[in-house]
Length: 161
Image 1 (cartoon, rainbow, N blue to C red):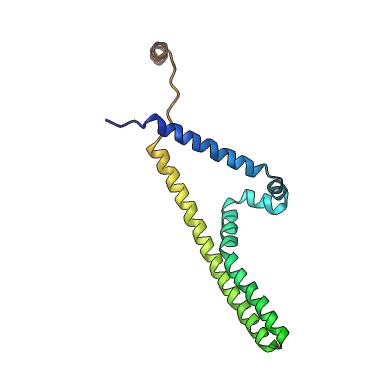
Image 2: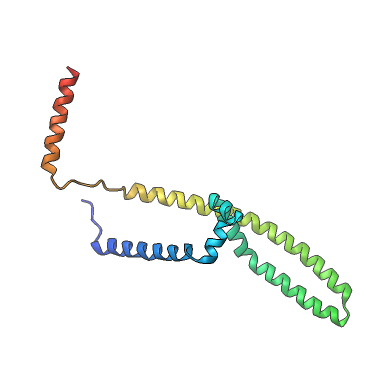
């Protein structure tokens, strides 16, 4: 015997879905988001969601290294005011090369994470559809449906003879 879900779980899921749809609607109606989505870049990313996820992950993961690089640039610029011009050039050059290497590595990591997230989404949605298949709508007058089904079966039998 299969256990049926308690009705509170279904209510909670519907309430969560309603809250999430309101959140998504508020984000999509934001004037800055609307302006970005009308730009050529926004339209391109709207047509290519995998690329949008990759760009989002790359930007999020590269914020810390870029911040550290800018901090080093500011600190070495202050040191240059004191007179350490050769050290500044060396540190900025080495820091720039290091930043380039880190950003290249982060781009590959964000690409791999985007692929993993995409595959996970596909697998989870397939499993959810397999475990909880959509229920067909049932008619209230089931006896009328049976009579109609029997009449159509009789007509098909006559048609074949």
